[in-house]
Length: 440
Ligand code: HSE
Image (cartoon, rainbow, N blue to C red; front, side, top):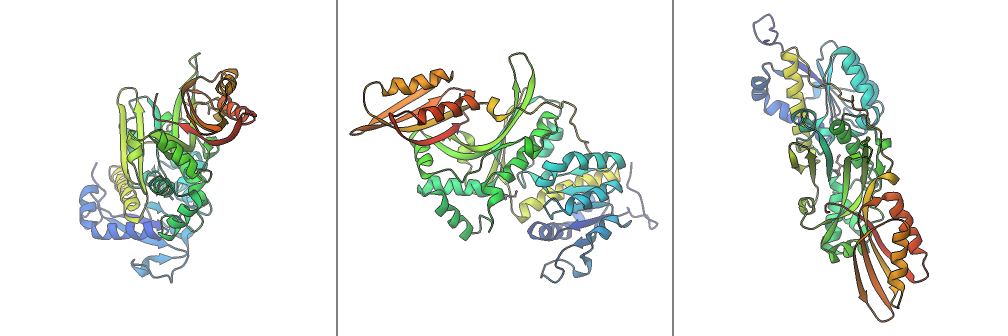
């Protein structure tokens, strides 16, 4: 079907409301302006900005001033708007604005991971009710085309695992700790000074940002509604210089990973395990060479095998690239009077609690160097049915460093093992405990 034509025989423009005009919003406006001709040719109709909702209209921005408004609510309700692009972030008032837009049949392009991870199903229901589109490529891993491959390109396959680095701030900090041997606090300070960490870094360093992204990835990969509350989350505040040194000693490095897995029980019951935590990975693993503020995500599917997606996970222009890609898709759908993919949550797999999830641990202990110590430590592992994969001991004068890497066991069994080992009189200190990923 061809684009609707206005009276003059030209295609009717697609009118866009932009909510938010910070770093990403400004880049969206710039790309829309600079590439107007190409975008119109690709879509079959021109894109026009109907308005830009901002909180502080007097702040200097490189955007047409006459488009600015503080009344976001009126803008999304306007009959003059076909598509709403949201780059404000946060849950309120954004949630109400996007629901209003969708209820009124206006398609939405959003970069809002927190909103999607908490209220994605409400947004999808509103979109279904009016036949509108909901696209959100920029919500996870910035510029990297990842959600569309999961939602569309791999829709014929069975995805088993998605594992990646989806937070640039924490990756920058961990990469720097690995390079310099410095501790967490001083590296965070340096990251803030260089502008790589926000003034309030909580969402990043405590893993909330990565957990929202993991929920979105798991929902798409496993056709199941997964919210941020279903995601087990540990941030990087507890990662010490000793952890990094222990990892290095074993040819590994530490990364904050988002891991979404399809778990199949011995009886064939499937569930979904989604977690965010620091983990040691081999330095030879492709994710180990993802340094600084970059993101990378590994996807494993039955037929396709392993795939890796890599690129810039944040920043104005990279994020705007993903927003524009979605805007073109939504506009093309509109021109063709069609719709993009709807929510696919038919599988409705249960969420696996972290305690039941199989993981592997690296444990580094300072122990007394005398007869029988190793057997006492090993006995605790055996008691908890945790199988040891590797042990390395280095003697000193009166004590020794004992490094143990386990085979996979439930996280609950591994935690109990560490608690009990830490209480043994022959164990002077538990120097480092960290999960191990990317091998076996
Ligand atoms: N704060 C995020 C990061 C970018 O550090 O990767 C936005 O999701």
